[in-house]
Length: 573
Image (cartoon, rainbow, N blue to C red; front, top):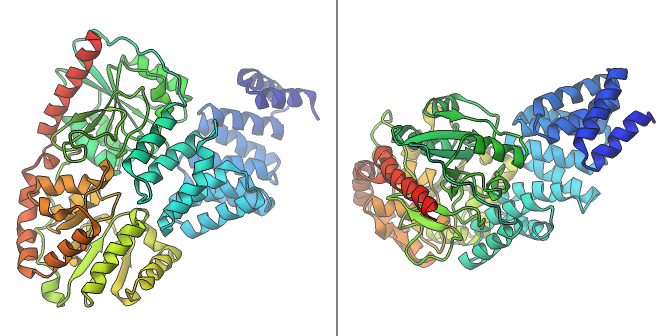
């Protein structure tokens, strides 16, 4: 082996990245087509966030050595991190074809297939990776990420528990916390204890002093400020913040761009990408912007940057919107909630609850037709619906739904979510209903709808059945806007009270039930009253429009007072 390249690989493997980079560069000056040096430097650049450059070097190495399965696998992983999932899946498929016994290649392929909604294929690749190497952490994480779509959340939690205890298991720990939100086997005490365990991973870091600038700089960290619920809800607030008192800086953690992200960027004073940057580097970018209050919009969702917040790059740090629970991170001072999702006396959060009039707000669509009459009037039977992610359908939810369907034998249920495009997902859910006495002919599944038809599906549903303990948020808001009532079961945690918050605001607290029996009785009582369904069809939209959920400007005014108070309290401390 070339001694120069061997030295580069040794330095790389021991984490001496600057030395390794210099050695790789020296090897390439001597031979620009050295496949080993191109691959090594490509991997190194990907590790430090220079994904496009790293991917280019990996491609160049493959021009010289096209049968290098490891290079194909690394290229696929780089494409995934750049959210080029189809390209990543193709590269990883090449790696698997060349090295079918490579657990890493199969695990990487699984990670690329899941965002393409090829869920059965993603599951199969992750399971094969674990068969080949039962100790491979990434394969466990990738399998756990896909299982909830099939209703196997508790199996996914079991896969992650051991990993979450390891020092290197940071991603697994976040995934575990996210999945626990939707598990009916975990209570709010379990959630807080696990979040605190996550928080203990990080040593305390000193907070910078607040700036003395006349305007407060408020920063937002997110990978979802685009065509995504977080973008829909946070964007209007960024737009409405008073620029006489506030400067808005956004730190996108994803390189993905679309029309929505361009629009949101136009509402910001600074747009500072930190996608792929190591946490220490990203923290320095935030400090350079003199951020007074930094708001995390991801929590423990995929691709989060909570370790960055642990470095305390801003004097005051808050959590909002993207994650409906506690982060467990001592470096995050407060969580933005409302009085329903976080009632007085709640012990769910390690952060201080800071209460807004509603936990989110949006620009209510003004280009949609008025809600139609309830479909039961034309069908002669009631159609229930759920447009939530099937990963939220817990066993307790499924039991309650089936109790409703059995009690009303001529009713139907429409399930809509993009995952139902996968026949394996559809089949497994149909089987679960059949096991509980609900015939397959009564269940209709729908997948993705084009934008112009997105809201038309609500015309086919009389009454939405919510999921628990993880309720709807975007789906509930859209349902109510389209005049379709939602029956929910309000539970012991933030994520189980989101629909309840909207229903209470719209004047329908009686649709937020305390237990499964009350849930079933409420759904049946409402479904049996065509006149009540027709009244709600007419009145829900104007009722919702008058609430804080549809008033970004007034929402922003309340948020401004919280931000001002947080900054001055920090100064006083």
